[in-house]
Amino acid sequence: MAVVSMALSVNNPTFPNRCQINRRGGMAFASLSNQKGASLGVRLTEGEGNLPKLVLSSPAGSEAEIYLYGGCITSWKVPSGKDLLFVRPDAVFNGKKPISGGVPHCFPQFGPGPIQQHGFARNVDWTLVDSENAEGSPVVTMELKDSPYSRAMWDFSFHALFKVTLNAKSLSTELTVKNTDSKAFSFSTALHTYFRASASDASVKGLKGSKTLNKDPDPKNPVEGREERDVVTFPGFVDCVYLDASSELQLDNGLGDLISIKNTNWSDAVLWNPYLQMEACYKDFVCVENAKIGSVQLEPEQTWTAVQHLSTA
Image 1 (cartoon, rainbow, N blue to C red):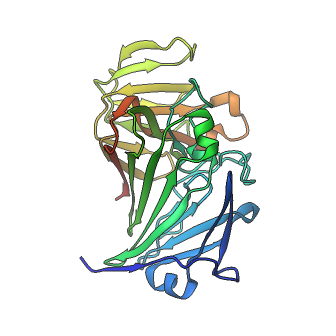
Image 2: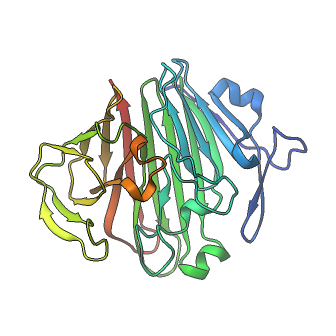
């Protein structure tokens, strides 16, 4: 494999070759030379709310956008220019609230629990640590480490890496979590992916036979069951966890696109559409999430890795 790699320069005095990031607990400076980045298919620029944004471009014409805030992929455009991801119209880009849409991280907690909803990884800055080009495909790797902010609610030392690869018709991610503490910890996690869709026409295949935890009508007391349908649809409010789900699902977004959702080590899946709870936009998206609902237990120095591969025909 032909790989061209580029290191980051630090404290470069001018933007866009410098991106200054406000971090809880201090300041971090990272930059990506646009001249070198262009040859890799990676640019660092200012996004909404002046937040740092990575733009990945493939020779085939596909494109992805990733905000360092939350390490959140907000756009995946195939060569036709069609964006297969969805960002809600009420999304806020202020570096304080999580970005509502795209592919937000839920870590180290999925859903409600002892700490804030879906954890803290989606509302802190990630750091770009590597950019490369693998046979024409732009690849970026971001990292997240514990900070005073994270330790105030989850008192463990960790190191997370999130690698994103863009190909002509696919978008792949690899999440690695390492326990850098002296004591064991556990976590749950998910990629809360919002797909652009016609919700009333969208459907998902590949879930038949999975154990279900249906949060409708009472999210606090999910009903256990088993999925009997070959094709699962979104006729109204949907919030359902699928345990030990298939490693490959197929989403028909109702807009003419069939999206393959493959994974390694994301053992569970979640379907969600808020219906009338989000009247302004519920018709325009569905969430099909790869997740690890049961706790991952890591001893010191142990790592856990999961891969998601989204592709179109």
